[in-house]
Each structure stands twice: as structure tokens, then as C-alpha cells.
Image (cartoon, rainbow over all chains, first blue to last red; front, side, top):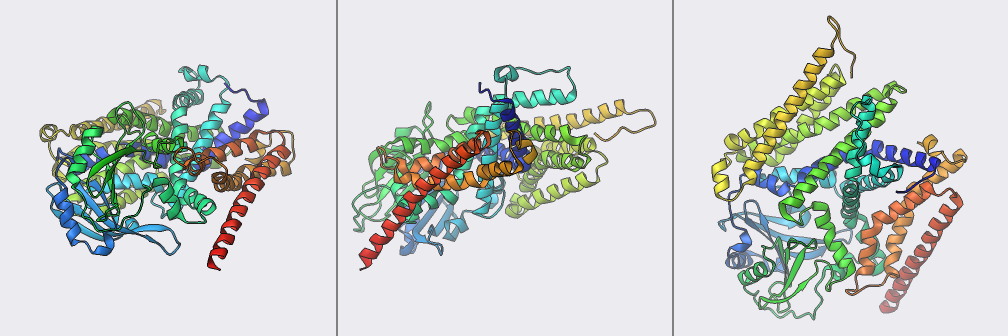
Length: 530
Length: 109
């Protein structure tokens, strides 16, 4: 417990309130989409109807890569990145390192996209920034992730914006801790018979206190990721390497060794993937090959953390002979405190260190954070509404964002399911979100009361959510529950059920609100706006 | 906001000074620390700790400076600590950059 003096506590209350109210709406959007993005991989599998059971790295890839290598111009054979795309397909990016007009390192090359049968489906040329956009089959999960990471604002401004939101969340979390005079008592205090404002404050206080450590971790790791490439790396490179970002990158992520440019064919990649899976117990998430086709080629396989560990795993192989060299940290050539800390930032933020369980906990706590952000702003407005009548517009805005954003996301999912078979999902997923958001704003302008607006948006979101499994099955021609279970994709029926349950809950909440309103309405009159 | 932050016994000028120190001041000092810390932190086992620590802890450094500016009753102390951190790390960075420029010029000759 930290005991501040009365005036210091007052200052912290002001800091807590203003940090939330100034950036709370954007923060709510980032936290809500981040909560959904915890299951981005699962949402991708559900929405696109993934039925392949085997990872692409559990199947032979060596012959495919050699075929692609033969098709690739020599200038792009400097390095190769391999990763999974879509329904256990293979993405292969042959590239070379370059500096852009501003002197920042970029990768330029050819990106081959293969399906899970090894058929080449698409070939894209350009820099990594140009070619790694959303595809038709992952437009929904990409949309969620892009909204969370940069709110669809172009780089670097989007990342800077979400980084600032992370700092605002950090300030709100720390000041929230400091203003609790009775932290442990507050965790369990819910006065159900008190005035509505007090009940709301208790709920906000309980939810925020329980999720405080999580809020701190999310804000800290989130702002780290946002500022890492946009501010941190250029500044550190300027001071320590005279502005040479590539030298900094090489020092932190590179594999030191004596250069040997003699041309030597790359070793058998199937041997590498099989060995990596045997050693770690799971398939790689990413494979990086540097100095491709040279005697000093190095292959690094990256894996999720092992069971009961939080740090991701990386294995280093000799590229020419495909023999195992050593396990290495994901950051730095040797194990170090800094490398370990940098390595665990990802799992701490994404919650992917203990499979489905940690993801479910991260989702639940993320949802609690959405609740805390929304109720915090509502408390701030309600407390001042009587003093300042003009704050009514802010209350209306809160409802538009608070319930309009889930409505927009559900509508985007529905649009994805309808348009994916037509090949236009990348455009319509975003367009549908914008159209639904515009409808929510219009409803906010014309709704007779804030309570009606809230009920309308809840009901509409619920109806769209209930319709999602049907759209998946009939419009997107997705697999039925039997087929999904048979191929080991229980996530498909699980998400169907989750959407239906959430949808029914929202429709019931909307309906119950209407009933309460009718009951409290005086005969022949109208109630005042909520 | 200024009226709510003006809870310590001080003037409007002091309140705005505090806001400037907590806002842009904390940001500038945090950036200077980010640039300067790699020059004196130890590299650790892999020789990267001096590069990685400032990158990881930048949000916490900023938060520390922000809350210090908000909570310390003495504005002079806030300004002195922030100023000292800024000057020491700024000087380290300037010295390092001038050293690199001199070395480059020497190589060109």
C-alpha cells in the first residue's frame, strides 16, 4: 500500500481521470481489438474454414524451396524467410537487404505464396512493407491486428499513436494504484444496494484492481512494441552506431561468424525442420536463412515457448550442411539478461506462452480492461454531467464508441464471410466496418435517448453475431461441425457457439433494457433521457 | 486540468511549469536517456544489454519522470534532476557523435 498525502492523492485522481478521458476512446478501440486479436490465429482459421491438419513444416518443403530458388533472379537470393500462411500453406520470401531513401534498412524481393498442396498461388514483388498486406483469406484477422497495432493510420504515425495510448494506459494503471487508499478492501467491495453511481464505481474499482498487473504489463509491452522501431531503434543507433540502423540490427539479432562467400547449395531443409521439431516438440513459427546459397549460410528456426517456459526458442543450423549448431536466444548471439527480457516481451503481450489456456486468460483480462476503460470514462462523465450540461454529447459519444465498435467489428466479420468466396474480402472487410461505424454515428445523432442508443447498438450487434455461424456455413461454404471436429479444428464449432452465446446475451440485454424502460415509464408520459 | 493539478500550495505559473516538466520535459529527457544509456551501460554476456535495456525500459523511464514531476512537492528538485539527467546524457551523446565524426574525417584524410 502506498499512502500519499491528501493533495498528492487529489493530483493523482486528476491525472488518472484526464489520462483516461483524453485518450480513453482510442484506448478502448486498441484494447478491444487487441482482446479479439489474442485469438487472431483462431479467428483466421474459423473465418477461412481451415481444414488442413498438418503444419507446412511437418511436410517436405525442400523440393518446393529449390523449385522457387530456380525461378528467382540471383539478385534476390541473398536471404530467405519461410513461414506459414493461410490453411497451412507456405510463404517464401527471397530477398536482399537495402537502404531506403531515408537510410533505413528494408528488404526487397519476391514473395511466393503456396497452398497446402504445394501449388504456387501467387507471386508478389516489392519491399516487405509493400507485399505483406492482408490477403483475401486472412483479411478479417489482418484487419483486427492492423486496427490494434496502428488504428489503420499510416506508419510511423499509427505506431506512435498506439505507443502514446500505451503510455496513457501506463499512467492510468499506476495512478489508479496510487489513489487506492484501501487496495485489498477495494478488491472485494461491491455495494449492490447503494446508489447506482456508487455501484458503478465499485464495479469499476473491483475490475480495475483485479486486472491492474495485467494492465501494467500490457501497457508496458504495448508501448515497447510501438516505440521500438519508430523511435527506440533510430535513437539508439544514432548514439551507439552513428545512425547505422543495420549495424545495430546486426549487433542485436545477427549471427556473428567469418564471411565465406563461396557458392554452396543450401542443405536439406527437410532435415532441418524435422530436427527442429524433434528438439523443441513443435513446428517452427518462422525460419530465417541468411547468406542463402553460400558456404556461410545460417538457418535459424523460431518456435513458441516450450511448456512451462515463457521465452521463445530459436535453433541455429549450418546452412550448407543442414546440421544443428546450437540453441540460441531469439535476441543476441549468447544468452543474456537483455536478450531474455527482450525475448519475453512478445509472449507477455500476446499471451501465447501456454497455448489456449494463456490465450483465454489474456482474452478475459483484456475484456476486463475494455470494461474498466469504458466504465471509467462513464463515471467521469456521469459525475460531471449535472455540473456541465454540454457533457451530454460526450456521454452519447461514449455509447457510440463503446457499443458501436463491437457492432462494426461484427459487421466486418459478416462482410468477410460473404465476400471471401468472391475474392473481394480485403476491400469489403474494411468497407463494412466503416459503413457500420457510420451507421452507429448516425444512430448516435438521431437516437431519442442515450439509453435507446445503447439498446439499439447492443441488439444490432447481437443479431449480427448470431448470424455469423450461418454466414460461415452457407455464404463462405465453411466446414460443418462434424467435418471440423474430424480434422482436428474444434476451434470452429467453439467460436460458432461463442458468437451465438454472445449474440443471445446482447439481444437479451437489449430486450431487458426495453422492458425495464416500459415498466418505469409513467402512464401516458415519457421518461427522461438516461 | 490545471485547476485540479493545482492542489499543492503554488501559483498558476508553477502549475504550468509542472505540466511542462511532466509532459514535453519528461519526453525529451526520456529520449536523451534512451540515446545516452547505451554509452555507459555494461554490454552483459552477449554484449547487447547496453542496447536492449534502454529500448525495453524506455516506457518505464518516461513514466518515472512523469510521476516524479507530478508528485514531488519541490519543482526545483524536479527541474534539477531532469536537467542533470538531460545534461549528462546529452553530453555523452554529443561527445560520442563528435568522436565518430572526427574518426570518419581522419579516415577520409
